[in-house]
Image: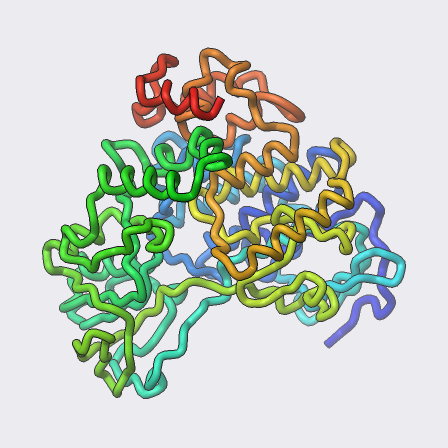
Length: 508
């Protein structure tokens, strides 16, 4: 291994290392450069795109994969998808979108492809040492500021099942991250373990593509939303500003009952379709999303079972006593946090393990100045608008556009994070969007926009709606915000309906 610089090179004061060239890294670099900072982006793959680059060894996408969030909310504020893009874009469209975004903002020259970070550590002088390797050449550099944007969903989590090592089905055992399409499962008996969105969507695709049988096993039955409700994408209906504001003050049982009522109206109870019965408390049960899963259960294309008890060769035994001979076993059981290049002392300070990282508001640590994280939260709902808001907050802070969070506030935020370690780690898109927008000073005041108030409260949390006020506001933001709200016929008038008036009064 050739070492280009055995002695660390100190990078210019305005240089910021960004680890990862997926959506989080690209949008971070865009906003750093907008405010006079020089992004240096480290990307291990030969192409940008992160998860949307199926050639990356860390990607879980495949050719033809579809997003589970709509095109309006799977974008950044500076670039909309082409008009011909599907309501739910495919992998190829997403990769093309990210490459167009990188080209539009001249990000490609600052991205080091095929460059893997080996170590991120603090220096004695308060900077950050980045040790990287590219094509056999190692480089050691010191930056004053670093953004970790490497993604949360890259290290598959596969639970241990007794006898799993004996599985002898012809297609073997895999995590859904390794799924590459339904063709190889045609005419086969498949067991999918898990009730995540990816597990349900992949099970549905395999069943509809001609598998002989599909059995889905999980520990708990989730309530399941369809992707569209009366022609409107779910994320336009579920992740609204009004819902986030209501959630800040309402009792948990009130929130649970409201969410359950919404899902039952939109999709019914899974038990009605022949799936298992979920817990009465929707927060205990959890929610997932799939357009075809429940219909496939109702049609007998998919059978649901409780969790796997043990495996004996090609036979999978379930907790209810049922057994199934299978050709393939797919685990759709989520991901763990993986930052293997983080120095042990830094990882220890962050309380880093497979599920937790201790940060003030998912971004900072009071004892690690100059280090920020973008996109490490375990989030439900559209990710890209939230990534942009978090990236803007970090860029504004690093560039001095807004003050950094006070040390005392970060200590309190860290304590709140640590107090939640034993509880659910999942956060919602709308709650995160409001959190980062407020911190960045770009959260619009709905009452200040009479013609847009309904769209801002009950329409989609579109990326452009966060360009109405504050730094980097855009003159065309009002018209584009209205267009995003009306995109699928949901919010086409500024006039509130009765139900919205009631909610508006409760959150005002």
